[in-house]
Amino acid sequence: MAEHPPLGLDAVRRALAEDHAVDDVTTPLLGSAAQAPATGRFISEGGCVVAGLSVAALVFRELDPDAVMRPAVADGDPAGAGTVLATVRARARALLGGERVALNFLQRLSGIATMTRALVEAVAGTGAQITHTRKTTPGLRDLERYAVRMGGGVDNRGSLAEAVMWKDNHWVLLGTTGGGGGRTLKETLAASRVGVPVVVEAETDAQLEEALAAGVTHILADNRSPATIAAWVRRVGPGVTIQASGGITAANVAAYARAGAQLISVGALTHSAVAASIGFELSSPGSDQRTPSTPGAR
Image (tube, rainbow, N blue to C red; front, side):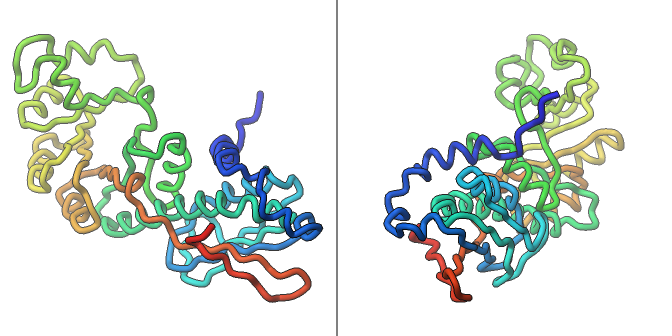
């Protein structure tokens, strides 16, 4: 059986090609020093939850097969300002050629993990779980879902093929919004593939009732208030998952959890997370002096 490529390898190769990492016109000006081994360190410049170290390592190995990266922490670990996250040894041209791409992945994924961890901690003790949506960066969904997991979140549907997700526009096309004519939801869902999970978005009490009549056991309550969530949890009883989504932030996530939502999906985890502040420093050859990177210039 063929082995699966490491997580993020395709994305790393696309990013290096985009940056023309092997066509760097600056580093060759160093002459022989560009080919000499050098050491770099990733250092957290602010508090974060780390994610993406293995992806950063892939960047340097693509440019120098002999590159060795030694993590000082693990993905999922919290890191304070000044914490050394990893040390990498490779030819100087590989370190300088891959620095920006490696930082882009590490900062982006750590930012997602950090935001996820904050929400997970906000709902601690309630039984609610935090998850993502499909509002991800094109081409980076697997990596961003990984970062959510490193922050303590759980996986949600990763593609259109993984589950039936009946949403507002499906209701419209079915012609039964508000209980109108046409096929019933139960008749329609009967055609879904056996074994494929079914999730139905409900925006009204009528849609909730039709979903329950169809035997649906996972309800997506989109843009509903915590009070509505609490009422629906009481209505459906045990055995039916109520997933809250839409407009959920760090300020109100605990209210949704206390209302009884078992799953809380937050699109902002992958579309609005702030990149973690992480720097990359090279050691000067033959000394312990280090040249700090300038994050905004690279």
